[in-house]
Image (cartoon, rainbow, N blue to C red; front, side, top):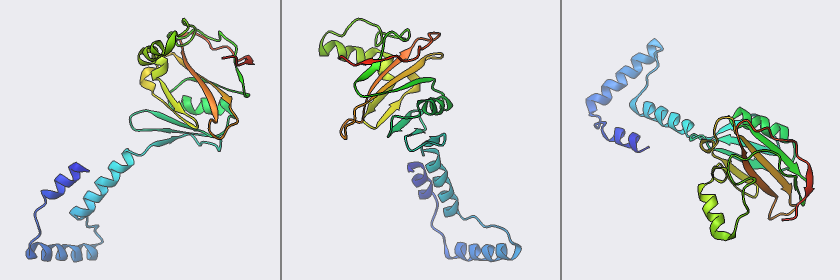
Length: 204
């Protein structure tokens, strides 16, 4: 928009002769069925094109359970309203360029481990010793950088996912108006198959 404003400021004010000439050209164009595009209309067209380029792109058809949009910078935003149709969500993420394994679980359940080889220590690594170590891991491990979320919505950052890796997502239903679901997310190492989930009680 700043570029458009600067462009507009370079257009000199029209003189009476300019206006009269423009009126004649407009009338001539109407008689010959030629379309007349004025400078303001051209600027509006440029502005409209820029606005379209910045609009998030809806991926797939979406359902009442979830929706996936792709921002111009490549970030994916997933709005998750219901824990159903994990295969459909996987397909929409694949269409956006992210290979994912999605599991929806009943309240208080998780998937039995191990299911895959983690791309970093976020999965299968040593236990975290205190808040300081947790913050350090979050700051350096790609699995934590690849996805960020809150109840109802999360974002995926594909730049942190390397070729061949799988984004593994596990959601358990919390049946709460404040917390819709609990999410576990990791990156499976390239070449590591992700085993089907065997639900077990969540003890942590």
